[in-house]
Length: 162
View 1: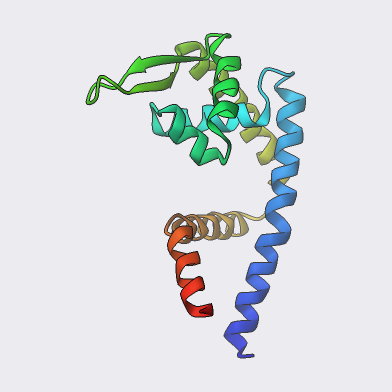
View 2: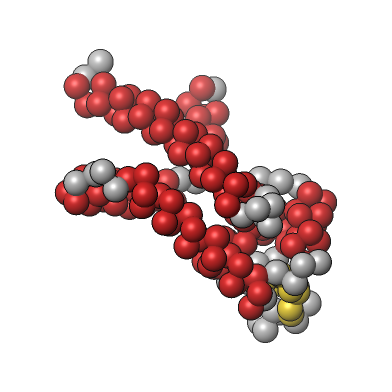
């Protein structure tokens, strides 16, 4: 094994170890400080709508890795509280998009501000240069992982194994 292979493996191990721990911490914090307003899946859907704008139900289901009926039920839960509304796509009037309402946007932004404040509290012992390293690392990971095409990866894997 080369030095680069060892470092890549150590990097992968670090990602595998830290990501679930961070996710658990943030999920638990969300449950505590949202006072039951959102479940974690609802929060993820609202985050996607906040960042990317209107989405169709099937697109949301695919992005969250759940079935269409599961996503439909999840949306009904937040739609009934006037956090999400349905609207027609301006480019394709047959398509219905889900969008955050003003109430939904305000609720999401409130939870986001709490979460940001909590994370700042947890990392405040870091030096400024360490914070910059974390930012660079997450930006790099985001750039790399956003380019991953899992379907193509597994198709290549099948061809290699055949």
